[in-house]
Length: 137
Image 1: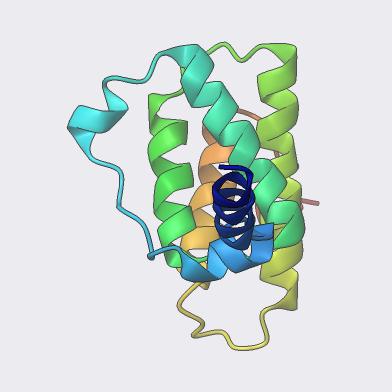
Image 2: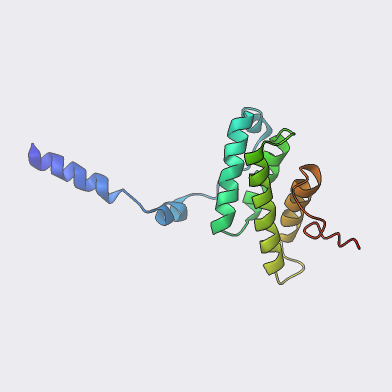
């Protein structure tokens, strides 16, 4: 019996992956649907948006992530609480930094970055004129 238990433990420990291994094995994911988004309350929406902001600290924005951020921003209610405003502001900062690093004007990520920056900046008032590309003098 004890040998069976140790074999089971060894098999289980073989299946424990690091975070990076898990990410590599994951499928591309699903796009947000309206029916799914309508099931999210404001707390879940804010938590998912905070997760996206954290993700942007580590990784570059992908088109799939841009769609999710856009959908979550569309689901977010105004006025923003302090923590949510900080999260939206963090997303603006990360997107602006990534936009500045893009060397090609025809990059497929540029429209997504600009849309997210514009929504966060204009609708939620979390970006400066400089970040929005409106160098008003």
